[in-house]
Amino acid sequence: MMIKTIAVVLVLTLIHNLYALENDHTQNDLVIPKIIHQVPRHGKRVKIFHKKYLGTQIYHSLYLPSDWQKEKKYPVIVEYAGNKWRDYPGTIEGCKIGFGISAGKGVIWLCLPYVDEKNKANAASWWGNIDATVAYCKKTVNEVCVQYGGDPAQVFIAGFSRGSIACNYIGLHDDEIASLWKGFICHSHYDGLRKWPYAESDKASAKSRLQRLAKRPQFISQEKSIIKTKQYLKTNYPNGEFTFLEMSFPQHSDTWVLKDCPERKELREWFWKTQK
Image (cartoon, rainbow, N blue to C red):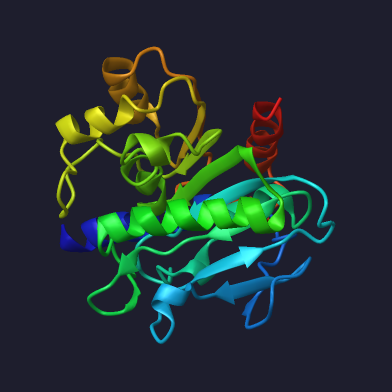
């Protein structure tokens, strides 16, 4: 009996792995630029420290598109990373969505930290100090719009996993930060679906944040099944402007944005259409 059970488990594991490979067969057609120490310039992804955090390891990255020109305005994608998990680093360096959407052209890509002031570093798990994280976001988005031609009417917030939760948890934290966004890109997880080990992760708190969304559109994607997210929003925000995408592959990953696949095409079409 035990041998049969083991055999069944092995077969199911093999089927799962083959399914994953089958649905992730395309090679990456994009490579995320490495973060370098340099003054911001077109086609480069650079590490930036605010004056307040000089001497710490609290920083963000800024990518000016390869076609950037000083006198022009550009949409901005503000991205937050997922938690440190398996081979995912939980750092700014692991962000992919903004670059996957733009392929490095026509969009300013800004990756922001979860500010851990106690340890003087970017938090690899959860939010660090939430008030400091929110303040960092407000300040940096404003600077990018003023100094580098970000269009304040076309600022999007995006994230994977923890970063997906951050779209509402950080992006709708208060009225001021909520007013920054043109749209939201939430991949894999959603604020309010379950309770997590941090303050105000309960459904009542999440519902309160959600009321700040107004009519701003959200693109919400999820591997395996997106039914729970749809049901949650139908109950708690039935008149929202939501676009749902259920992934054809099971992996908890954001690497699909680096591939020439139907899911990325749909996301890109939503992004450019939303700006009209």
